[in-house]
Length: 254
Image (cartoon, rainbow, N blue to C red):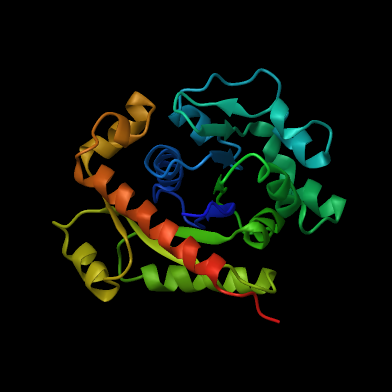
């Protein structure tokens, strides 16, 4: 398979849907299952990705300085415990990133930084904050594909429509969107109704082994590789790779 760099944004405007769990496990799948040189870039000030990979928090709060051009990305990138997977962690300085981007007036700053990082990586996975502002708009302009975790409920289609509208409002060429049902419990009738309404959407089950990711601070594929959740992440990544292959094979308009 030809390696083409892609920016995969994991984005949700709603909290509590497993966004960081999905981003971190997809990063592991990209590096370990697909042998892609992968960078997981955390844009959420909570630094959930760093916690999930048991990285020591950096004493200096410098994540914001990368966007200003004060320091190179290599200064902040940290290797994970897994071959082919590095992290660009977040910190509390990113709380002011939106206002900083607006002051800079560079509408494609994240896209420019992504292109620079593409020299060293095949896949950039962005763990995005729960915001609708200039930061999220820049993420959408940089993304090759947007993964949208959604709760399995009858309102999920409406939530997805809201995200689609935001992306269209901020981009001239909206990136493709892949909705993903997260925390699915097939014992619940509402969840089954949502799955039946959108059978083509990937689904990640809510199981105790997946909750252990935050306890053990490592991806589920490393300690429970044959569980339904681990297998679901593997299938999801295979679907992402197929989608990326279609995107790169499609000529750009004009």
